[in-house]
Amino acid sequence: MAPAHAARWMVLALTLLGLVLAEIGEKAGVELHEEAIERIDTVRDLLREVTTGAGRTTHRVSPFERPEEVLDDRQKRWLKPLGPVGSAMARGMFVLNRMMILGLFRLRVEGLENLPDRGPFIIAPNHVSYLDSFAVAAALDRSMLRRTYWAGWTGAAFGNPLTRLVSRLAQVVPVDPGSAGLSSLAFGAAVLGRGQNLVWFAEGERSPTGDLQPFRPGMGLLLSYYPVPVVPVFIRGTYEAMPRGRFSRRLEQVTVAFGEPLDPRSLDGTASSQEQVVEAVHERVAELGAR
Image (cartoon, rainbow, N blue to C red; front, side):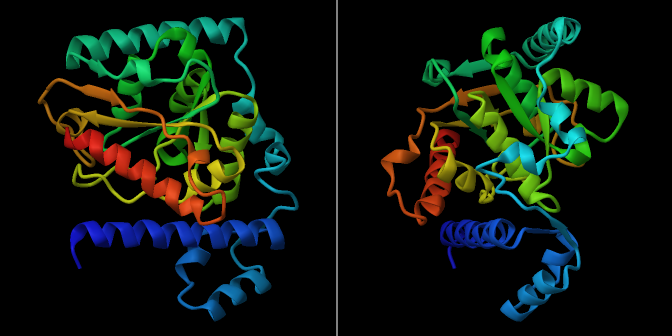
């Protein structure tokens, strides 16, 4: 099978799996953990995991319709607006970040005019390095940053007190599609429902090769309930500077290219549009990377 066809089939398979798990979460009130998902090879295995209750967390409400009821008090704190002191610290942090990215990596920004004037909308970049979020943040102005939340992997963005503090100041919400898919989607839905923008790395993890990976279905599920514009983004140079698993001393120029926003309402309004919008955004990001 050709690589392009294999990638499209992978996108479809991941999207269908996400739809099934989300439907289970809403109808049966359960969220399967990563270990339980790995044990599923057949429909019989899926039924066993749901009915026995092994490796699951119970939810009684929809993560899309009433997302904040899915989250506990500890999780909700990541959605609270920053106070005066926190806001001042966040401004200083973003100024320092911009100075570092501009100075060390000679940041170049393309297509910034493609960002909608009003939110909410989703920014969907490729993901090859831990530097990606810092580069995107350096490309945005202060007013945009105030209205923007970031989906951050729990293992990296919330792993210790320092990263949790930085994540709080940067308005990062914890996302773990492997073991907490429904609560991750609830965070995304809560942000969009409040009229804020959301940066969502749809690949789910950093690419090990630097090539664009298939997108996971979470973004399509969010857009089926919140059909907001999606801005595709392609980041160049961060893989050379800090690829997955190692640090390089090559301080090459980093470029952040924003594409024209995609309106998911321009697609078919049926359930199949969830796969279509994931594939459409993936194609837009790939086109930016091919320029």
